[in-house]
Image (cartoon, rainbow, N blue to C red; front, top):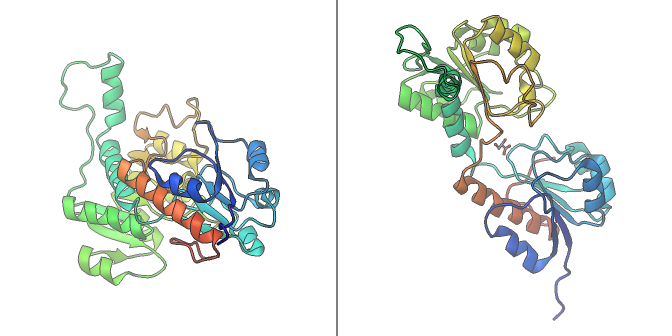
Length: 326
Ligand code: DGY
């Protein structure tokens, strides 16, 4: 019996768990050794001659990368639920399958959105900074007063898997009233969470807490701009665990400085990493985390398994376990 052909795979970062071992047993796998990602030039060099790529959300996989890989490239398996870093048109034109890792990170990402919401609403970044920087003075009745979510209105922009998981937590735990946007109303959300499908303007005007759960694309880039902030309540808290570019960051800086909104909690920014000199970093009522939405042991191990399954399926011309429609 002839041995199945060993294919060439490039993995752009070491990933948690033992899933890569399955790939290495069957194929010739090269794994980028550094913690710092390959530069665009290094990426072009390393993909040459590969049949499969296992990529991170921070790797830009555009036509030039696919071309540099060569016509034998069959699959790009992204280690993320989002795939805005991949040129899907170029992939379709070249017959390259694209995979992602949905579902297994919904709980972790929703948990982080809850964390950001509560921490931003209670001014945790400033409170913590006061302790660290020796500014902890006498207990005072009227400083660091936050806002409470219980019974208030939650606006969820994008009612997909993560949006729904987040809404379940906030409605179930804090009895929030739910408004949401999505392409169409969702009967299960309306019935089980008392949600109301609304136009975005109503959501922006009525919500006390707003959380973003849409994919980044041409329709959602800068969806939250100066006009959107102008519609929000001055007590509103905004949370973003989706993609940085959904918010116009300059407009956010102005909205916070001008007290158009109360606070923001961001797991994603533009760019990533955000330089420490960026004006957002210095604002006391903005909490910024380094894109750790899916960063739990459970989530990342499960993502590794799916990402490897996607590569293996793509190499054997089978439908992927989690395939992005092209
Ligand atoms: C993803 O997987 O797209 C998320 O941004 C991870 O946090």
